[in-house]
Image (cartoon, rainbow, N blue to C red):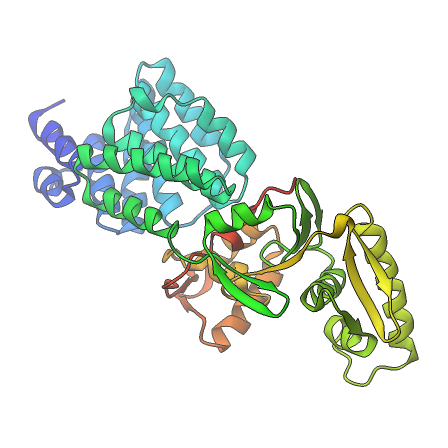
Amino acid sequence: MDSLIAAAARALVLGDPVGALKHVALRADPPALALRGIAMAQLGEHSRARELLRQAGRGFGTHEELARARCVVAEAEIALAMRDLGGSPRTLLAASATLDRGGDRINALHAQVIAVRRLLLLGRLDEAASTLMTLDATSLPPSLRAMAELAAGELALRSLQTAAGRAALARAEAAAERAHVPALLAEITEARAVVERPAARRLQAGHEALLRLEDVEALLASGALVVDACRRSVRLGTSSRPLARRPVLFALARALAEAWPGDVDRDALIARAFGARRPNESHRARLRVEIGRLRALLGPLARIDASTRGFALMPHGGCAVVVLVPPIDGDGASLVALLADGAAWSTSALALALGASQRTIQRALVELEAAGTVRSVHRARAQRWVAAPLAGFTTILLLPAALPVG
């Protein structure tokens, strides 16, 4: 490694991309192209950075597999920043294995941290946890340890383990301070602030209160029957009944929970679940069918009793009934939550993260754009979607797999 390449590499480790470019900006050999690509990525020029890294990867010979693997890892990190989640993770894992065999353990672990962050974006929390368990964060250099602890903190918070999340983020902040990388420290500071912001609203017997993540964790462990509008499920202790794919049943469950301990008029339930303004016998017959389905689903958790004018929710054991509502409501809430991180997402990445078809996501984005909630940048294949960061509260409970399903 010549002196200019070594100096550029040191500058990049210290988070000084401009200093790195001063050493290699006029060079076109593969090592210089790779370092220029990383520098451009640190400056936010992701498309140009990806192009430079691909050129570098092609320029390295067949005997330089470690250098090519490092380019693959750097390109994967750029894809993560661009929210380009559609590629196969096998390429990154193969590069990690190559680096590990070649003795470059630090970059091999870096590849695994990138894989964990990708899994977190996709809501695949179990896989992310399994990968994190194989990492020994104490042996990592400060910058990489900060990234690993940040991922561990996000995993804990999204699993509603707030004490573990706080501890991981504190370790991440300490490591970032030792690494002297301002951008990383700012990201960790923002993650720590999330814990203190309201994450949901609690509706109970006509009263509303804002809850932080640790309050939500306590509520779910309190023994109350929780109708969760964040994840569209009904929970009692460790038992859960997911209703995300059964919107009519969830609408009925939420209406009954909001009225508890009272009942709900049949016509009001029909309007809530079916959107019918003038109920007729057909609607009433359908309501009986859907109530029967909801009774069967919630049987181990609660009864649904008929009253003179409608139906009432009666939890087993006489426990309280609480409705957990997100800070933002509506069918596009999860989309807005993903876009609120400030990154530009492609339609395909949003569909992959939310487990929906691209067509469904496109229709939802068009509606949100018409409402002024999100906006698109670029056109055709380069089109991306962004939203203004949501100040004052966190959207963790709206992200994919934000709560355990029990």
